[in-house]
Image 1 (cartoon, rainbow, N blue to C red):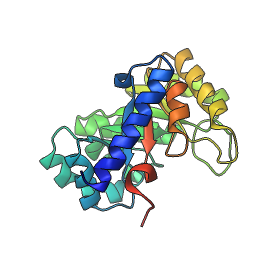
Image 2 (tube, rainbow, N blue to C red):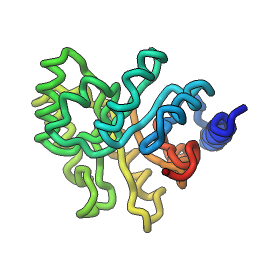
Image 3 (cartoon, rainbow, N blue to C red):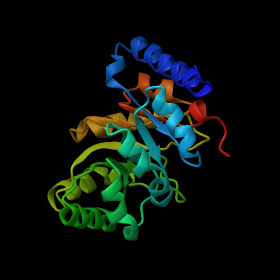
Image 4 (cartoon, one colour):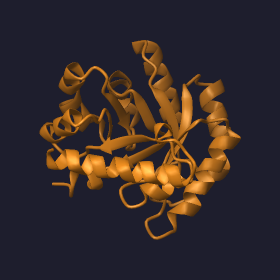
Length: 221
C-alpha cells in the first residue's frame, strides 16, 4: 500500500474503534479528507485507496483541482468547509456537493439565488461559532435556531446539518456536545465536527462527518 493508503486505513480504524466504543455504527460516520494546499496527485492517491469524500477551504483552489477528478471519479463528493464570499456563491454551487459554511443572511440569499439559476442544490450546513470567537466565522449558538428557520423558510435552502470549529485552547468535547444538542433541537441529522487532533472525541459525541487533513495528508506544504 502507498503511504497515503496506510494513513487512510489507520484513520478509518480509529473512527471505527471510536464509533464502536460509543455504540454507533461505522456507517454512521463519514470521513471528509481535507485536501487544502495538497496537489491533485495527493488527492488521486487517496482516491485510488478508496476515499471518495473530500473537503476544501477555498473555492478557487477547488476549481483548480477537482473538475478533472470529478470527471474521472463520478462518485467523488466535494464539501466546502471554509468561509464563502458572496461573489463566489455561483462557483460554489456549481462545483461543491455540500456547503458546510453557511453563516449569514447574505450568503444564504446568494446561495438561494444561484441554486435557482443553476438548477443545482448542494446540501447546506450552518456553521456555528460555538466559542463565540470574534475572529471566527459562524452563527452564535443563541442565534442558530432563528437562522436555521430563516434558511429553510425564507431562502428554501436544503439545510441538513451543522458544523463547528472549537477554540484551540478549550476542551473540544464541550463544543461537540453543544453542537449535537443544537442539531437535535432543530431536527438536523448531519453534524460536522472533529479534525485531526480530536475526531475520535467527535465520533463518540455524535459526529456524522469528521474533517481530517494532516492525519491523512501530513503537514501542509
